[in-house]
Amino acid sequence: MNGERVVSVIVPCRNERRYIERFCAGVLGQQLPAGWRLQLVVADGQSDDGTRELLQQLAARDERIVWIDNPARIVSPGLNAALKMAEGEIIVRMDVHTDYAPDYVAQCLALHAETGADNVGGPWHAVPDAGAGAMQHAVAAAFQSRWVAGGASSRRLDFEGWVDTVYLGSWPRRTFERFGGFDEQLVRNQDDEHNLRIVKGGGRVWQSARIRSTYRPRARLGQVFRQYLQYGYWKPYVMKKHGQAASLRHLVPSVFVAGLAVLAVPAGFGLVWPLVALLALYGSAVLAMTGAVWQQQRCALPVLLRIPAVIAAYHLGYGIGSLAGWWDVLRGAAGRAGFTTLTR
Figure 1 (cartoon, rainbow, N blue to C red):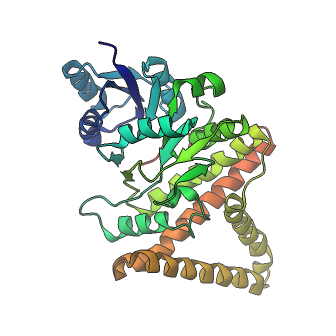
Figure 2: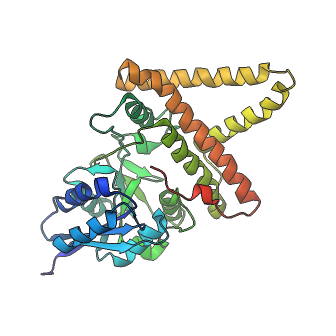
Figure 3: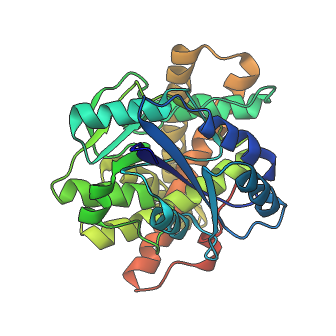
């Protein structure tokens, strides 16, 4: 269109009627550099809450919006379907439950030009909803701590440099031509796997603090546990695919959960002190992490009191999920149906 360059935003969604209109308005309001035009491609996972009908209305009012069906109902097939419809020379992935700075897309474009990276993204910044309760504030505070996350660079809001993975991401079209699309066998961790494929194939991933967004985390403890149960479950499938050992931060939760299971056996026969010692050691670690979170964020007392439970939900969910994933991987089983339904 009049020689303009196109940047395509792709997003998978399912049952997001409460958020989708606001999300689309925010994307279409992005401040682009001169000479650029934006396209928004939404892959709907057969929503049954009115999201599809609302997307039809939005697309009818603005030709920049394209919505397509995602019958698989999970993220990776939705992303691949959206990629097929994307016209842009740069592809930007977004999530409905994230708010974006007005120059988010513009910064992605600028950093691709500056770095020549195969993927460019920003840090993962968790912020509670307006009027959120103490639990969601605790989830966000624990999420942002590098101690809780095992030192992941993606939680560092000021980090600028080469990394293994980034939150969401943006790619030149040539990245997908060279490394392929997203693995449709993975319900979770498809972004980490794609970044691993890029890095192992000689590509580069850049994280920049200039790419600013805020993610709305889960508001209830059970939701956090189920989310990390899925993250943990699908990680062994990524490792098996690439023949790559886990990093320490991925192994520790599963080793801890396995230790609890092993020590529960003698405890059942009266030898309880090894299990008590392990629980005491972990409790001390959780309290130390809680203190580190408080030093970093100075949260209110009702929030602080909930942080230990949130940390435990992160670790236990990931650890139990990882063990279940390794069990299925080692016996050659496909992913279980119970781990294929996305939770929110």
